[in-house]
Image: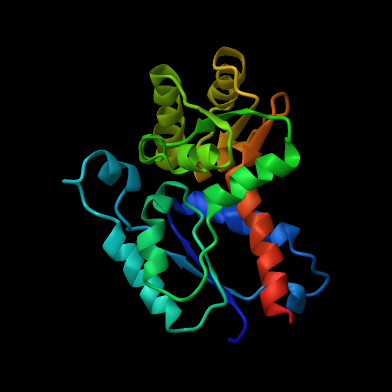
Length: 236
């Protein structure tokens, strides 16, 4: 296969499935041949990213991710996508291991906020404890001249319950819990807009969409940027 891109997925698998569903649904296609060429690496056994970020004595995901990047680079993809926010903790190491471009989901998400909500100043961040701790979104928001709004310990505990206990463990979205997290970030933390900074939260948005408060879904943004880059690089 020529002219394709590679998805480094499986973190988690159901979130990757959600990304693929949106990718295929949004691709402008009227026949089989109109869809995009891609390889999915569903590397489900990559060690948990948050566990390692919080405790470096836990298994390190980086060697597995580097293996994927190096193996796939030999096939010559046009670019990589990495539909896992927490895995962007390792972005610089992955980028250094290949000449193939890697889309940066947090950077693209913050840029989408600037386009879609130009008057927003206080940007709420939701995600795993790993994403909050590694400051991947906080740094991008600061670099854009905006103010990051972090979840309280109570909101973060609710978010981890939703991500791990409901979605990762049981493939179940607690709609009330999901919507309460967003409401608390807007009403209690006074965020102007909230980033869904975990692909499990993106899965929650796909199944039980939040329609009341302003959000930017990182996975949805990555889908759009993936299609734009694919149409630019693969169809010319």
